[in-house]
Image (cartoon, rainbow, N blue to C red):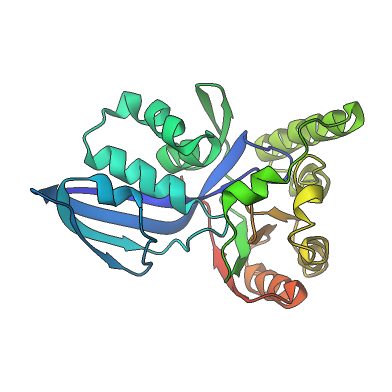
Length: 260
């Protein structure tokens, strides 16, 4: 019996569109053995038809805490798990997973854990803020990543490119210096969140509510619709509840942490 354990991931972290991501303490666990035909049982989260495990000639069980289609990397976790169960060597896992997933950020964090930056085929691990809680508004209604990517503009202004470049640099510095006072500015974005606010109109208010409740900074989780915030120790619950109330959309508060 072969087994694999893959974490949920949150991409972008505000300004780092398709570049930054982190792994959080929600897991997909799978164990399986070869079989003549696929035979899977699922515990926790039931995947839709056509899920990646259907193509494996194995029988086994998948247990997942990662909700589907809400910005927590459920697709990346499933694809990494499937490739690992297929026996893809560790040195090839990232490249293979990126080819099927289409973008590297969630995949990199799912494989390497912690906080990562991705450029082409390079993955760099950044310092893990282990003294911060990750507060979440976990949306109940999924939003297809394809839809959330399709609404993004094909080009951006020089001013917006400079805006995000500066905040990416500031965010990386904040992680290295452990200067959480910078996160509020460093997690701002003009490349994807303004466009996605058209399908998540409550996003600005939810981010503002997180800050008002004590969060250092907040942003859309991946392509959404969930929202996450970095909160001081002990403040995660109140931040998550404030975001959930502000969203006014079906969902639940959750507090977790980065896994390294």
